Amino acid sequence: MKMKLAEIAKAIGAENNIEQWKDVEITSVAFDSRQLDSGALFIPLQGAQDGHQYVESAFANGAVATLWASDHDVTVADDQPILVVDDPLESLQELSKYYLHKINPIVVAVTGSNGKTTTKDMTASILSTQLNVTKTHANFNNEIGVPVTLLNMESSTEVVVVEMGMDRPGQLDFLSKLVSPDFAVITMIGEAHIEFFGTRDKIADAKMEITHGLKEDGTFIFNGDEPLLQERAADVEQHEITFGRQLTDNFYATSVKQHEASIDFKVNEWPDEEFTIPMVGEYNVNNALAAIAVGKQLHITPAHIKKALKNVELTENRAEWIEGAQGEHILSDVYNSNPTAAKQVLKTVEELPTSGKRIAVLGDMLELGDASARLHASLAGNIDADKIEEVYLVGPEMKNLQNELENNGYPASAIHHYSTDELDQLVADLQATINAEDLVLLKASHGIHLEKVLAKLTTK
Image (cartoon, rainbow, N blue to C red; front, side):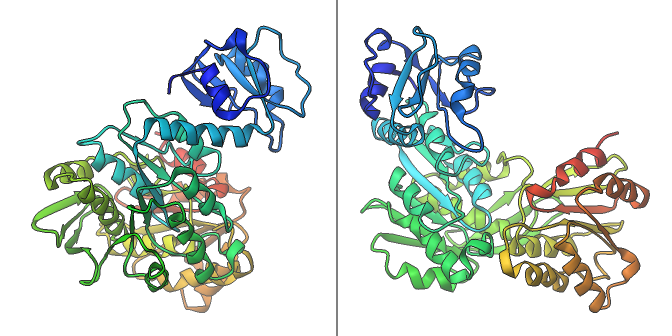
């Protein structure tokens, strides 16, 4: 990003005279006064705290201008550049839309109950082999993060891959219309955020909002094995491409072979080519297929796709293998969790070869509402005592899983439960039982903070 303050003021309709600051150059935007680059435009957002109280800190840390809400008295120095607007968040969104149109890249929008971040990473990796690509940083996937992603594009960007999250109806409608995607991708429908939606049908309705801003000549790419998406796709007028494991899909995988830390597979489109992804879990093959579908539409060659997938850089804490201090193999997936994702990764762990024990450390899955007890208990069907020898559970909702496991005959002596305040005890108990070559799964919603457990298990 590189724009003069005068251009920004015109784009967002700033209400004050900025003649004395019109030539100030903005090279980025930021809403955290502690984390910004020199040359940033600071966006004081209203949340649990009022961002205006951090404007001075932002200037001290390198910001060269700030937005300022018109209902706030101006308290900054006269020589500090400000743009007075009705609502800083709305102005941020308006500016991002202006800049997007100015740069005019191809837009790939990705959502889904599971796999959207991995699919974003894979898609960006594939496209960047032949194109200049910007992608969503970390989980900047909401009404704030998406505009920031757009505004931090370089002017040379040819494709922007935008991850879109949601926790309520209408959110994806807004984000899709903000970015007007050329490609809208839905990875799958699960139970994530079922607290807010009630049923998978309503989750599917909300996910389909990603097509509301899809360009007339755009392409809708979705999981063809999901009946809820197939039904709703009938109402989409744009070109459609499906991926999955069925022969009826446009892109489907064959010859899937899972190894200790990777998966090999072939794709019907190029039956003689073998692709490798550096991760476990067959569910990740579908994420790769979605990315491959986008790559094929943008004329990325199979050779480039193969190289990109094999060397993809994944967002931190997304199902990554880490060696523990005692030589154990830790499959860390501590960033997020929901029933679909937990069942998938448990299945993967049970299938992985190991000369040691398999140990599952599972924390509460958040935002499941009235269905929480039932959905936590449902994981018991994916835990076989002959394959997963020890289970460590964290959080009040995991009591439901403990009860269901015991009802199903899982040895009570192999089930250990902890409150969220007992992570140190959990670590001590794990360290006392873990041996070299054991396989340890860490899976929980981020709010349980199993990353603290991971840090201690890997400290030598």
